[in-house]
Image 1 (spheres, helix red, strand yellow):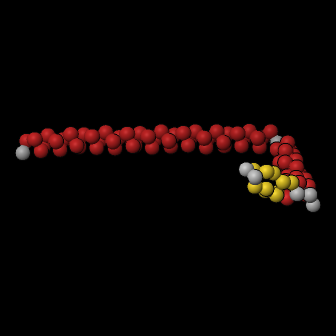
Image 2 (cartoon, helix red, strand yellow; image 1 turned 90 degrees about the horizontal axis):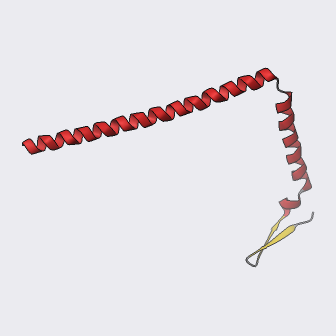
Image 3 (cartoon, rainbow, N blue to C red; image 1 turned 90 degrees about the vertical axis):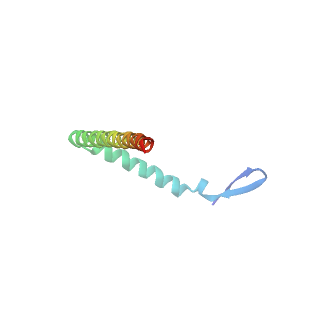
Length: 92
């Protein structure tokens, strides 16, 4: 096994994984499998997955909007209550 060395600020770092042919070949095979899996899926499956991902993304966007609205409402309520308390303290 050939090791590859890099010099970084006069410190030698040997990384045997850089030249590991089995690891590289395994990654290539895995990438090919992923591409084949996508290519083998039917158009109906792709459409259903696209719709599913779209719905999930829209739900996340809606949830973000609800959180912002909820936080804004509580912030406005807090400001109104503190303003009312200042009036009550000034009347006393």
